[in-house]
Image 1 (cartoon, rainbow, N blue to C red):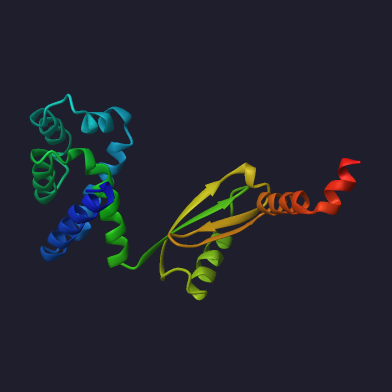
Image 2: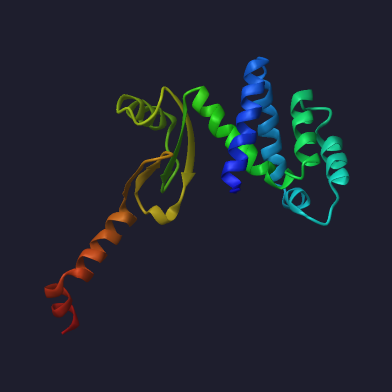
Length: 189
């Protein structure tokens, strides 16, 4: 079975159970905490390691998360670790966030620019995205500054990409000149 399918099934189970018990927001906080813990390379490698026994993995997770996690989340982790599915925990938590955002109609948008944008511009972009129907009213905006963009901006959602960067336009121009037989013969002479 594929990782995506496994992650989706377990995430759906956790979302359904959390919704049923009115704990969705609390479990989401636990998932956020877990995702920041997984950014630690050693912790992630420990979860993925076939050498470390599942009892040891559970005791480590319990020691780290017992005081801050909800009992439901801890029980969910314990079941996964007991079944040998702990290697999929990062993917399951990512899929949980996807399902959480779908339930709450939150659209993830990544905005890449060459320099920092003032908050008024960011608010205007959010309003335009909502008005255009690209995003729901709840937007999870991730701002990225990339000097390779040169100028302009790039907006990425889960299923759309709008690239209005100067770097993209220069690349398209370069491809156009490369494919133009007449110009390439003039340049080669």
